[in-house]
Length: 75
Image (cartoon, rainbow, N blue to C red; front, side, top):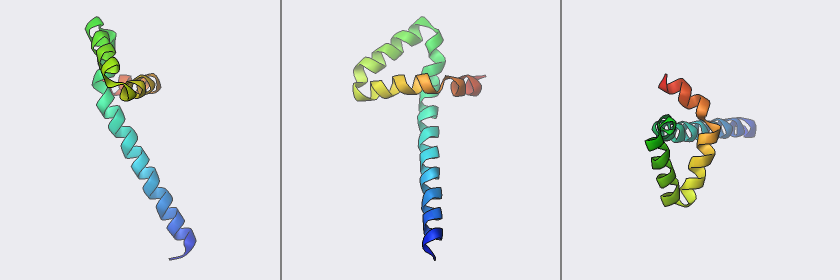
């Protein structure tokens, strides 16, 4: 194999891994985002963020990035 082919294969593998990671995070957060419209869901989210420390920040970032995906999936 030439170097160009190896680089192409590497890029494709990295892209697939990144897409799977994003899909996994979105699938994990869809129920959380769906419940944000209720007061109970908001309190549950607040508790989850405050108990999670580092991951709490990522919950907030992902829920601000992915609301359209959540709305599309939960329709």
